[in-house]
Image 1 (cartoon, rainbow, N blue to C red):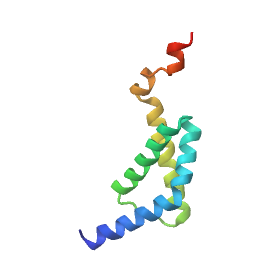
Image 2 (cartoon, rainbow, N blue to C red):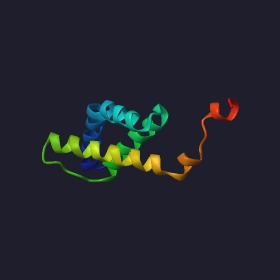
Image 3 (spheres, rainbow, N blue to C red):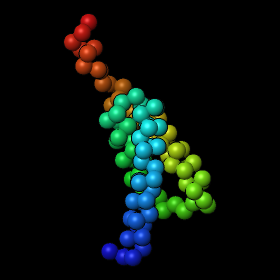
Image 4 (tube, rainbow, N blue to C red):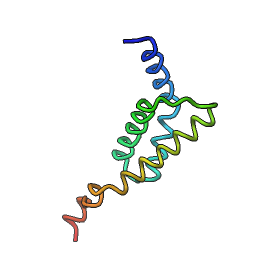
Length: 94
């Protein structure tokens, strides 16, 4: 493993530590489902890892993470899989 990758992993770990609570809360606010919000949180940090993005400052970093979180939430809410699911209480409680 190269030094650059190790530094990148440390950076991602710092971002997860710093922003995971905010990302999860924002996702719960949008999706209204904790387990889906946790999936969104994971997807957001995967996207950050995949993008080799550098930020001008911490405010730019935070704004970008918020925007990615909102976009991932919208993707989840638009997905065909989500539209086909019925809550269990709708199946058993007329």
